Amino acid sequence: MRAIFKNIDKKEWLDILTLALGIALLPPLWAIASSHLGITTGSAALISAALYVVNGNKIQDGIKISLGFICGDIWAYCSLKLMYILQLNPDIELFIIFFVLGFLAVIISSVYSKWIYLPTWLCGWAIGLALMASVGIKRLGNLPIQVGVSMLVGVWYVGVGVDKFQKIILKLCNKKKIT
Image (cartoon, rainbow, N blue to C red):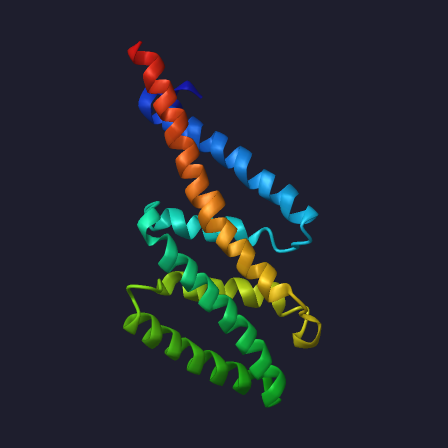
């Protein structure tokens, strides 16, 4: 076991441990809070936070990442609504809807790339479909809003929050070393 960890220096260990602590603390707090707020889609926050992290924890991209998720949430709702309205052969219907909406998502996000991050649009669309499809368009209620809120919580509370938490802890650890 020791051989596995011997290539990790103390700074890396500190980074790993502070990240682990942030992930162990903040997402579970959201999981508890979301259930008390009537939000059943709290898990979307973890997926959304992951995309924020993959983008490099760049807080300056937070708005365009968030707008991408909101666009994806709207796309998921539109997909379900179109499936309900069209009533074609399910395979043909699915192909047409995904073809058109996927095509439009790429074009729109390219034109507005300063404001919308395409990967989060597509991921938000997938998250929304995964969470809403089994409910059906007639019984969605406020589920699309819950999905959107969870994705925004993922970016701003889990993604940005864990990053800030980790930086604060690392700063405190470095101050203790200096004094």
